[in-house]
Each structure stands twice: as C-alpha cells, then as structure tokens.
Amino acid sequence: MKVLPKTDFPRFFRTAAKISPGWMNQIQSLIAFVDTSRLKDLDQWPQGALIRSTLKAQQVKAGGHALLVLPGPHPLPVCVALMPESGDPYAVLTIAARLVKNIAPYRATAIGVATVVEDSRTNVATNALLSALLAATERQPTAKSRPSAHWQPQIVRVSGGAPERAVSQHSGAHLARWLTQLPPNVLTPGSYRKAAVDLARTHGWLVETYDERRLRGLGAGAFLAVTAGSARRDASILRVQYRPRKKSTRAPIALVGKGLCFDTGGHNLKPAGSMLNMHADMAGSAVVLGTLLALCEAGYPHPVDAWLALAENRIGPEAYTQQDVVTSLNGTTIQIVHTDAEGRMVLADTLALAARTRPAAIIDFATLTGACVSALTERMSGFFTNRPELRDVVESAGTAAGERMHGFPMPDDFDDDLDAPSADILQCLIGGKGDHIYAARFLSRFVPADIPWVHCDLSSAERTGGLAHVPHTITGFGVRFAQALLESTAFQQTITD
Image (cartoon, rainbow, N blue to C red; front, top):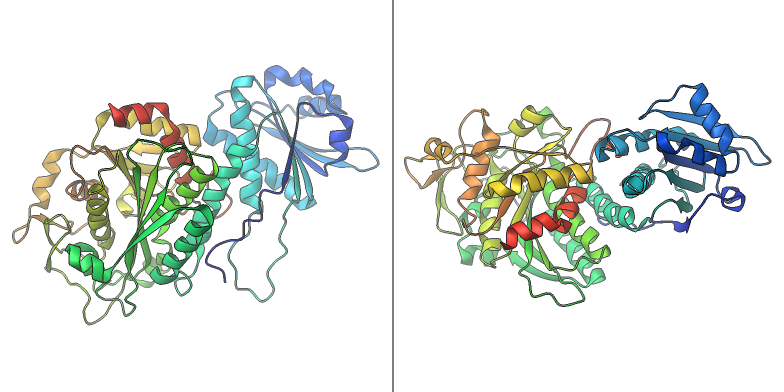
C-alpha cells in the first residue's frame, strides 16, 4: 500500500463557451446547474427544450433535481439541478454530490459539466460539480486482493466555468483523505516523514527535521513526554516550506498540524470502540500538508510553512503518567492530568517552535476534543482565535469554501481552572465539560500574544456517510477552508494591520 496516492487526476479537461451538438456528442453523461431565472436558456442546448419540460413536468423547485436520458443514436443520461436560491456553497456542494450519485451507475468515461447560472454564481456552481465528481471518483487506499471496480472518468468537458480552482483544491483534499485513511502500520511517524520529504522534493519545497535528539536539545519536554512510550524512535516535527516563484517579502504564514499516527490513550487507555479509528488522529497534519499542496498548485503568491507534529501515543515502560511534570519548549511547566490529552502536548511544543520563526500568523488544525463534536456534531468544525476581529473573517472563509466553521469564545478567566498546584499550568481537567475551550486556553500559552493565531478543532474530520460533496467517512475537511482563508483579502489585511 502506497503512502502517497497516485495523482491520476484531473483527467483531460476541455472548456467550451456554449453547449453545441458537437460538444454533446463527445460526452456520455451530463451534470448541470441551472438558475430558475435562466431556464429558457436551456432551449439553446441540443434537446434543451426536453430538459426544461422535464423539470417543469416533475415540478422541480430550487435545490431539486431531475434525471432523464436524452434520446438519440447514443442516449445521454442527464442530471440537472436548479440552483438553491441562497447559493450557499455548502448546499450547492451537497446537491452536486446527488447529481454525481445519480449518474454514477452509467459508469461514463467522458463527463460533461455545465452551468447556466448568473455570472456571480458561475464559479460556485462549476466548482461544486467538479469537486463532487472528483471526490466520488478518487482512488482510496486498499489492500484487497480483489479490489472493487473503480469508476474513473477519463475526460471531463466543462462549459460555464474554469476547472483549475476545483483541481487544486481536490489535489490537496485527496492527499489529506488518503493519508488519514492509511492503516497505522503503513503510516508511521517515520514513513510519514519520508513521504513528506518525497512530496517536497517533487514540488520544490524545503524540509527541516526536528528529530527526538534535536527536540531534546531544544527542551521540547511536552512533545517528548508523549513519544516516550513508543518503541519506535521515529517521532519528529517537520517544517515544510513553500516559497512562491516570485520572491515575496512577507513573513510566512505557519500552518501547524497534529500528526498522531496512532493514539492508544497511553496509560489512560481508550476502550476498544474509542481506539478503533485512532489511526486518523493525524488528520490535522494531513490537512496542513494537503493545504500546502493545494496552495502550491494554485500558485499562491506568499510564503507558507507547514509544521507537522508526527508522533504516536503508545503504552510502554517509559510512557508518561498522570501527575508527571514536564517542561515545554517555551519554558512553561505542565502538570499531566490525563495521558489521553496528548494532542495539546505535541501541539504546545510545535506551536512554540513555529512561533520562534516569527510568522505573520499561525493556524493550527487538530482532531483535538470530543467536546467540540458534542457542541457542533460532525457537520461543522470549531475554531478559536486571539484576534476578535478574525472571527467573522474565518467564518466567512468557511462559508465560501463550503466547510463551515463556528467561532467559540475563550475568556481569560478559564485559566483559573487550569492553575496547577505543582506547575505553571494543568494539561487539562478531568471530565469533558468545556474541554474544547480549556484546550484552546492551554494552547494559547504557547503562542505569543503579538502573533495572530487561529486554532481549528476538526470535529468534521470524520462523518459516517460523508459531508457535503465528499461521499467518504474521512472527509478531508479543512483544506478548502484553509485555502480560502489564506487567499482572503480580509485575512491578509487583518494579520498585517
């Protein structure tokens, strides 16, 4: 099983200004979005009047769809949806997934993607259709002797918008989903590091490795406490640096990701049901690496550093225990309360290390707390920030990306509960009440106040049945959002003011 996926997408994209008989003859299935105000424009398509009459006969409303087969020498399955009136990207992505699901049984190798919508909605509609198609047809890691037949269109023809945005987003999101699905005996901290180095070599990124010996010299006691129980001494923090071709004078934005390749819970051992999917506890780091790939392929004009905290939380004679006191990289002493709160430990030292490089901003991603899932379910993710003016900016980026983010408060007085009898701070509290807030307050101790910071608690990293346009349990949630946030003019202005 490969650690990195094959990049066998996109297939051959072709764009066309309008739908012609020749264009229709080159596809085997068609998915499309149409605005209710533009229904008459369907008459300009070959057999478009039949599509419009079908929508009318089935009384399809905004947000609904119809499936029909256009007659001819080569019958053409067509699934058309009316754009929801709000144009909300999450809703549009969800509808696009239904269109792809409807045409999937036809197993077409040449797909048409079309939009007949108002100009301001074209990019959202085209992006949703392509994103849903790519997510549904991407390869998944498998070790089956006889893998099931894989539907993979070879040609995608686009009318009504450009595919580049969806392709770069999908490159990153597919990488994030692939890595997160790998079994823990395939994706270890060591193999993960090698894969990141290979990826960096392909794309011209620089990689700096902080292995355990180097971290010990830096005094990264929080990170090393977590890795102490592992028989493999392959844990590390990686700094992967993207620099645009045109030199930028801006300080890099630091993306930090929790990369726990397996989490037993340590001495506070998880029960079987809770431990079952802990190979996916590295989803935050996969989002960070996937975002770097998406930004690189999109030609992002500013420098970005990806910081990956690659480790395991195992049980062993040297594993850390409750009431241990350790000293973190920035000198803060931490009293251990629960060995299954390891994520905030590895992030503490990684955040402190990233902060030493004086980035323009720090954004971290982690599958950190069950409390965030309890608060929001898996349909959206939560975030915290040390800049109140960033709250609306972050939520707007999530809305635009179709990956919804909800901002939580983290008042200073929560620190009173984290006051430790034997150290500067308690690692956590016993009991899960408000744990997402306490975790954010804990992490804030490792980010200097003068650096803008956003902490993302990825409650949407996994959802049975998928989410929005993604049909897989592992969603890759965060890549689309992160790319939208970093490209946001409002975000850039806020962090530079």
